[in-house]
Amino acid sequence: MTRPSNPGATLVLPDRMIDLPPRSRNEALASLMRRMRMCEEQGSGLDKVVQACEVFQLPAPLFRTEGDATQAVLYGPRSFAEMTQDERMRACYFHAVLKFLSGDKMKNASLCSRLGIATKNAAQATAVINRALDAGLIRVADPDHPRAGYVPHWA
Image (cartoon, rainbow, N blue to C red):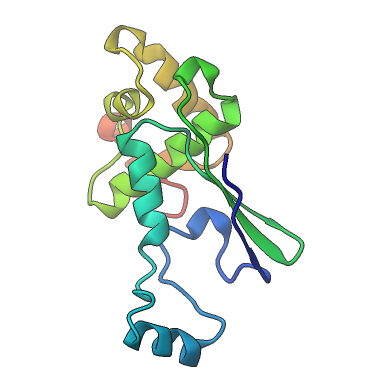
């Protein structure tokens, strides 16, 4: 488990770090670093981390703020059975975010694939979706057509 942190309160809410444009505390310094090719200044780093967690079926990263510091917690490989309820819901939320950003919607089958759940055990993905719905992390994309899929709560 890796725990890098940045000093200073976050400029973006942790659950919105993937979809919102990047913000910098010091735009002049960020611009200079981009011109020196020390950074990209596009804010795609977290997107790449979350996408890699999806591809390798790793637990979703945890982004949290503690006082005036922001911390990212990355986890090693763990099966669905070994993940906590919070880790499962976080994976569900980030999966819905990535699907939404790519112009798609999360569905039970896509979450099964993301979490490494066999098709015959799809009810496990349904339970995770229901918990994420109850927690307000995701919502039904089209209330008139509930089978249309799910999107992040802010979409």
